[in-house]
Length: 143
Image (cartoon, rainbow, N blue to C red; front, side):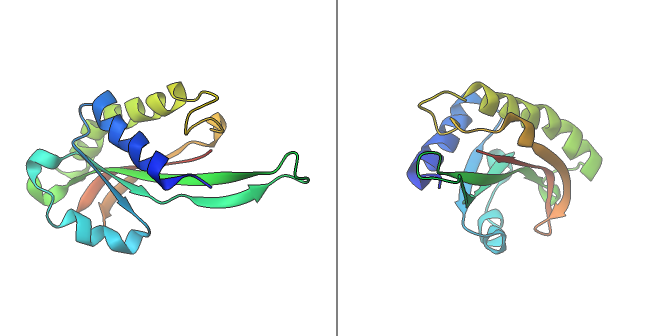
């Protein structure tokens, strides 16, 4: 299972590595997102919503046992804050989303949060009107 304090430190560091990312919030389930996004202003966008990863045990003996974590991150902007349509927002956020994925790949090392990253597990999906008013991308992967 992913250590949540390490997860928070990692994504707070992502704001430094990717200056286009203005804000990161952490939630335990998607139903909590509306509480976070209602007060996000234009100067705090684009923002990321990081869900607490789910875990699944893997291995057949205690020698090869480990927990795999399923990560889900949203990179979004609120549509009502800008005079852009969904396509324009997704086109604007696509380079940032790709840069974040590349950063995650570069961060894989034996002592990092991403040490068990499965490079082939990335899935990136367009999101429109997510949580009622947000558009952008979701990125999921296993580590």
